[in-house]
Image (tube, rainbow, N blue to C red; front, side, top):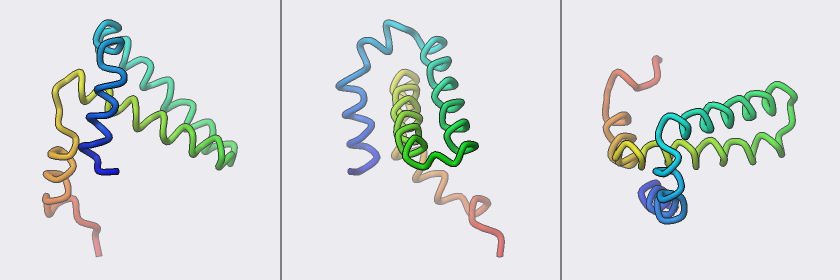
Amino acid sequence: MELSALQELVKERYFKTDSERGIYHTALWFHEEVGELSSAIASGDKENAKEEFADVLMWLMTLANLMGVDMQQAVDVYLANPRKLPVK
């Protein structure tokens, strides 16, 4: 799935409830999911980590939607920045 399609899917499914919750509380949910991912990584639980990676990505898309950020464009700009290339 393309990043832009994923962001649109997340918007269709969750934007109403996420916008009602507000950006501040949505950001708190995002931070909670990052914490759960960190715990899964620390424990070496790969199956749980896979689920938490997906949770973090969905909440990140939700935050981008609430802020009106096009993630495809943001990633494209990031990848085009020569300062972001790996050091050899």
